[in-house]
Each structure stands twice: as C-alpha cells, then as structure tokens.
Length: 153
Image (cartoon, rainbow, N blue to C red; front, side):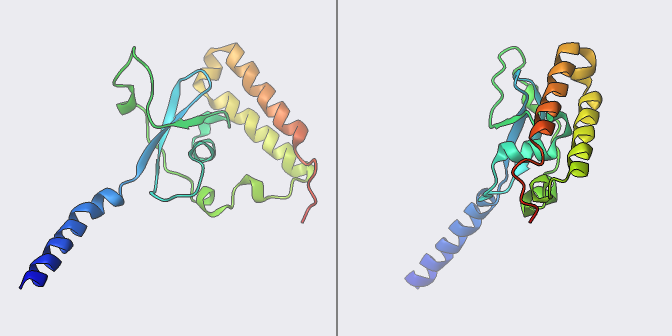
C-alpha cells in the first residue's frame, strides 16, 4: 500500500512538473541601438544560438540583432508585451540555412540584393538616413567576404 501511494505521489509530481519542462523560452531580438524588433520562442534543450535564430527568423534584424531574455528599457516597462513574436524558420533548426549554400558569384550577388531589399523594407531605415547607410554598409561588407575561402564542396 505504501509503495502504491509513493508511486501515485511520484506520478502526480511528474505530471505537475512536465508542463514547466516543456515551456519555451522567449528571446527578444534587439538591434545594436537597443530597439527590440521581434521576439522568438525557443524550445527547451535547443542547441542553436538564439542570436542566430533571431537573425535568420526576423527580417527586420538584417543580421545585426542579438537575443536577450529581458529588454532593459526604463522608459517603456511594458514594451516586452508589445514586441511581435515571429516563428523560428524551420530551416534554421535543421541547418539548411544560408551557410549550407555554395557561395558562387551569382549566389553572392543575389544575397547582396536581398540584403539591400531588407534594408529598404525596414521602416527604421526608411525614416533615418544614417540607419540606411549603416545597413547598406553592412550588406557591402558581407558581399565583400562572400565566396572567399569557399571550396565549393
């Protein structure tokens, strides 16, 4: 009888802790100036860098975001509830992202044009010429390194 009660107590304890173990972690994708642009939900035990997932999943990041658990903004304490949550792109979790492609000249040119298009789509860049210039400079920097050291395997 005691072992049956112990087993029942153990089962209840396991059931009570299971939802907490399966809870996802919310990361905020933050631009270098500290402005949050989106949030992502990461599965527990994921082996992926949340900052990489932010940059692959959130178009507004333009590959410049870092992932943080909390937004430090005293002026707008409720900002965490206003940031849109975007889904993590499935290819980001499978490894089928931009790093899996052979960087041919055509591929590099297409990536550069896509980067510039992302710069133009970002409303922060459209309203601030300095941000647009920084974004375009980033695209040029990535373009200059694209295809170097690529064995084409």
